Figure 1 (tube, rainbow, N blue to C red):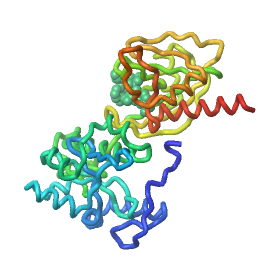
Figure 2: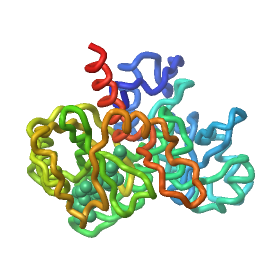
Figure 3: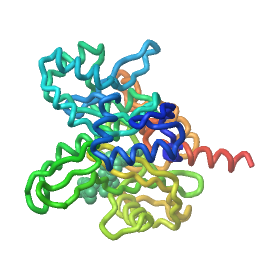
Figure 4: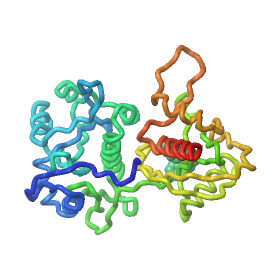
Length: 343
Ligand SMILES: NC(=O)C1=CN([C@@H]2O[C@H](COP(=O)(O)OP(=O)(O)OC[C@H]3O[C@@H](n4cnc5c(N)ncnc54)[C@H](O)[C@@H]3O)[C@@H](O)[C@H]2O)C=CC1
Ligand SMILES: [Mg+2]
């Protein structure tokens, strides 16, 4: 499942600026780089940098037609910037995002200061909007690209202290910013959001907002209010949006979601009574909400996201891509239903 602990990559080198194999070693290595500016600067000089331009990741198409993000070694980024006559000091803006599969630290860098087309041409790749990238990248690659973009965005939008209005300065890894001349520290933040697959025992409830692409349905979602527990948010959102009373809430998994700015999605199942399933949809929030049975969910899960455009007919019903937690909830529910029918 999406957020069951997924070990990013393994590393084998034992030098001080590279992480060792094993999850504990890698996490301690990354934590040291967050806290020690000198160690981080040293690691950066022998690291790969995932490239962005104006928050769009650089993607290249592989021989098997799949897509991957482009990460260049520090020295290749220097060569690239030199060839474009750009200031090499922008590399200092790199943000630490994890460990690469060759064992070194992995950073990301936004090349907004140089011409996008020149970078694309030199790398045989394209800068692609993040939403589009999500549909092109594999479900193992998309989360790291999303994390990188979210951190770059956070740095771009937190250049000033919200308390004093003074400029903020980042540490070397980019794990936090400090208000100039003070000890006020600012850390990247996510907004907690619940996403709940409401079910009545044999069907589940999906909805679409007017802003969704045609035919897309997903589980109900909503931002947590200050002071609320996850269970309270689920009960409130389902009551507000669909007019239903939730009887019980079960946690499934979680996910960082970069749109429109970082949310922390908490995925749950929400049971309602099969005797009280009549919907009263809040049309200021939702364009439509409907009950789907197992067969309809299984059919929808097989439709590629987004589906190929047909010739003007009614939009086919489709669900979020495989790596979205909305998809994972539907998949899990369908598997549970199937097991119930078999046993
Ligand atoms: N990963 C996935 O599968 C899915 C992710 N989502 C994400 O969940 C998020 C929340 O879903 P919605 O139904 O839009 O939420 P929602 O039902 O809470 O409605 C959004 C409204 O809540 C208010 N709001 C309260 N706190 C807010 C905050 N911290 N940031 C922004 N607006 C806030 C605003 O008025 C906004 O228009 C969306 O950003 C969407 O991208 C939604 C469905 C599927
Ligand atoms: Mg909502």
